[in-house]
Length: 450
Image 1 (cartoon, rainbow, N blue to C red):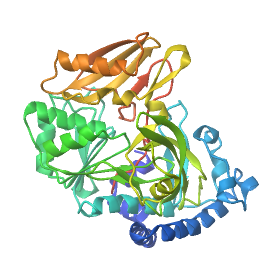
Image 2 (image 1 turned 120 degrees about the vertical axis):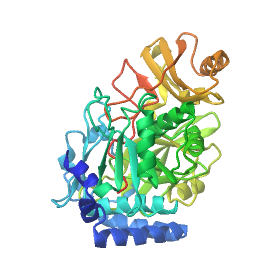
Image 3 (image 1 turned 90 degrees about the horizontal axis):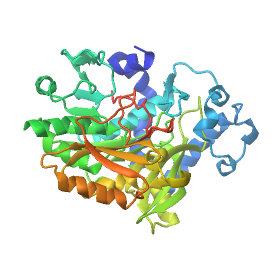
Image 4 (image 1 turned 180 degrees about the vertical axis):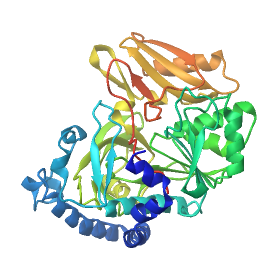
């Protein structure tokens, strides 16, 4: 087990590092105040924190040329510019600190270092998200269904879980969850009686789909998801199968933006966590898509300035500039997060990109999950996990929807399956293009709420 894994599974280390008493309490108090503050106060707080961060960034090998300049004059920072040059972004030696690695979707992961202040502030954000659903993250019993490697995938014998933090946290293997093993998971979850189930959206959907097929239900007060794009259908299914309230939060390994979503499905950025900039990307149907560019307000150890996350938010086309500023400061909600831009297109004729493919399953009633596989330039396979009642009419409707986006030069077929393909990190990308290295992914290193 690496150091991050040890911290996540040790209550003592969590309280010492992730909830460092003075830093955590101060950050949580400030974040709570910002959530109630007017826009001018949010701007003023951000500017104050930004001065400290830019001063630290100006001491790095990367930032010396921009030292003393206003943030608008700093260039946008792309992930590919950092790989192999992470040391150029370090402003000072600090300990304790946390080292994270991104998912490495291009084959080379990025190493990110975070200061204790950054770690404590992020934990305060997660704890506040949970508190807004009526639970205390420090006391609740939590089951985790994400990408944790509990045992070798070929070992099909129970148990498929491990307990940690003195029995307060139950970590379940999503890789071993099947119709055949479901009974073991049901029995364990009933006896453990979690207050919160923390999961990848795809893992949560898989569990709830299996429960639905088996005619079973569980009682879990809160379902909390992160690290993948959340389909509103997952929220409805989880409520039905678990009787739960719901929350989702968005973050990245680089920790330059944080947003949360509750029952209505819309998101809000959390003010005081980062400076968020929204850069127009393109219009698509009735929505406008904007790139998320973020600057951490807390990580003075590795201060990423104007970092281009690669993720997109969706807002109505008619959204004005003042409304965009209000969104960036958490005053107004936005429609949804699409995750990395490279995860919502397929290749078209002549090297073009065909966007809008996540909408292919809109209006299809009898599907739990879907995934688009493009093995060649002229072939697309739409994998679906069928719900009860799935029939040829649904298959035909999927093909008809696909043809509104995908030209006839590309062959489209629909295949049913029990589980969708996952990455090594246990995530389920919506689009997998076999002729490229890119895969859709949000940060693999989002921490378990401790």
